[in-house]
Every structure is written in structure tokens, then in C-alpha cells.
Image 1 (cartoon, one colour):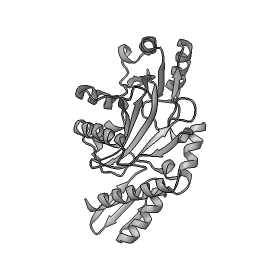
Image 2 (cartoon, rainbow, N blue to C red):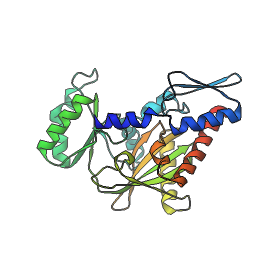
Image 3 (tube, one colour):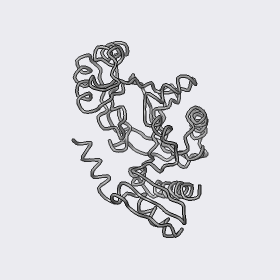
Image 4 (spheres, one colour):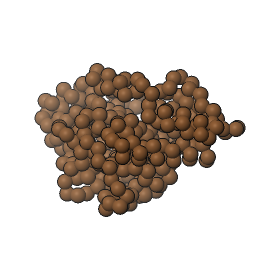
Length: 279
């Protein structure tokens, strides 16, 4: 319930990108219509050209690429074949799912997974913002938390817990990094800004930016996306591993962290809006 309340609070008012989009459309003489409300469903029209934005999805990726980006197990399946370092996610489905396979998705298979790794993260397979992400360090914990998530979500992703120093988020448009920041946890094991993590901007002059850029270019060759938020885990040994990809690019939390972040977000959004309407 807490996660739902946080999301409702975040999206209950006008989003940052909606305010900037209105300004952009006014400057470019673009007609803007809000199909549902000012939160979901936006139609843009410039002469005969029509574009749609839904939620945080700007429609620049193909539908199949978007589905892969938002599917943790699908991303892992692609990157496994390309030997690109990433945090592995294993998919488990509810027994009433049409795709449920007893040999791959049963609670016993999940329990054996825990017994192999001993320290496991459980999360909604299609979830974001760190809500319902749980850690199990004992078998009893795992059984209870697996049952809890399975009751609430139609698919579960399991991954081995890794010792992570910090996470990095990069917003990428057509192979260009628009902005990048570190996520440094405050307490516990979650690096989400919605759970108290601190955001620290990364300059394009830093070595970290260059290392992350090299990994992003590898990923784009494997999954040819145009626009995405790309999250990396920087492990205690210094290795950089992809954590997850998101086709919907959200900036709300980062925008609120300070003037510098706000300026970075505005610059990034104007580039996205321009690409959306000019392509």
C-alpha cells in the first residue's frame, strides 16, 4: 500500500515533463491534446504529423524493443548470448499463468534457486521504483516473501544479491547520453531515489561516464533501442554490470534534487521532444 500511495502522490499533480512539454509546444506552434488527463495519454500534432506520449513512453522505440526493455528476463536472455556483464534475473510465473511451466516456475524450483545462492532479491518482474523489492537471507524468509510477491504480482524476478557500491542511471537517446547520475543508498539495500537514495550528477568528463558509455554502446548493438533509462550496478570490485533497462524515461525524482539536476532534465527533455516531433 505504501508504494501505491507514493506513486499516486508523485503522479497526482502535473509532471515536470508535462510542464516543459506545454512550453515546448507553445514555442514550436504544436497542437497538444490531453486524451485522458494531464498524466496519461498526450497527442501532439504539427501540420500533418501526429505523435503520442503515454505515461513515460515517448514512442521512439519499436513496440517489440520496448517490450524487451521492460522485461528483465528477456534482457538477460539477449545479453547472455552477447556475453555482456549484467545482473541475472530469473523469471517465475504464477501457477494460473497460461505460460506457467511446473519444471521452471514452481515454488520448489524457486526454493532450489534460493538454496543455490543463499542470499536473494525478489522483485516484481515488470516493477519499477523499488516497490515490493525484498531480500531473503534465510529459507524461511524466502518462502514467505516469495508467497507475498506471488500473491500481488503475475510474474516474479529473482536475482542473486550482489555487493554493490552504488548504481548509475543514464538516459540515452540515439546512442547519446543525455544525463547520468549515481544513486547512493541511504540505508538498507535499495538504491531508488523513492526510497531515500541520494543522486549525484556524473560529468561527461569523468572516467565513469566513459566506462558506462562503452557498455551502453555494446547493449545497443544487442538491443537496438533509441530511448531508454539504463541502470548499472557498480560492484565492490569495480566491475560495471547492467542492472535493468526501462523504455519509459522518468525524471521526476531526479529533477527535484537540485538546480543542476533540474537544468540537466530540462535539456534532456527538450532533446527528446525535438527528436519526437522532427523525426
